[in-house]
Image (cartoon, rainbow, N blue to C red; front, side, top):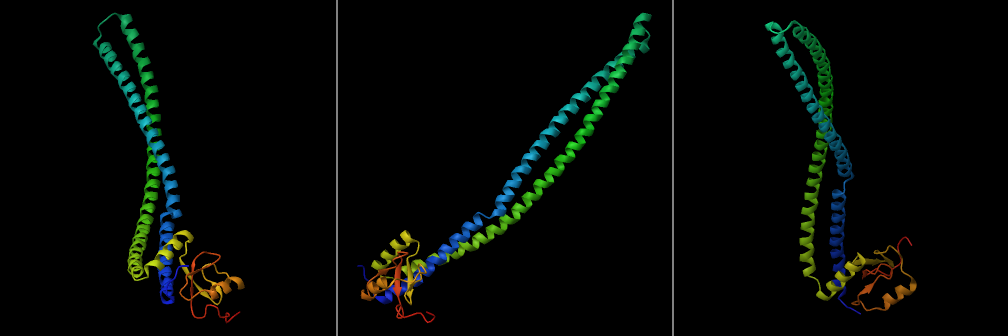
Length: 251
């Protein structure tokens, strides 16, 4: 059985306190890293960006459609201008001039129809641009909220990290002052059990929170003061104080 002076074993409680603090800080950091607000905003931003992308595509398509409509109107207008110039010149056979007049009338009807199409596309484009602008505002608002929360979390994380560095430094300094053999047993137990040491107080293991059986207490009582004993339930080192086997005041 491994041994260490009772006074050295008592020091394990302070070391365990530091390790418990480090574990608490690690849990706090994990909670900050997985803040549900970030997850929710990331999901919302993904949806909003998808809808913004669709709105941009719709605007792009409508702008291309408007260019085609404008080109069609311009093409017909140019042809009307040429035909009117020929008609106004008065040159040519009478039947040709009559046919030209009919052609101009047909082209004017065509231009009117194309201008109606152009107007419809322009009106639709205005609506699509307004929708894109509204969706961009939604994305900007989500990004603003995300940035605010991210800054808040980063500040909290920085504080946690700073405190953890301080505790680790204190732990390293304190651990260096312990009996090396006892420290090795503690570190192995901590790695395996999650708790390295706990107090045995009034017959109860503070590692498991359970009162030890009479048989287990008898074994511990038979052990020498410098023997390192373990909790039968949690496996942690049990540190015995002077009143470890005394009846609980409330029990």
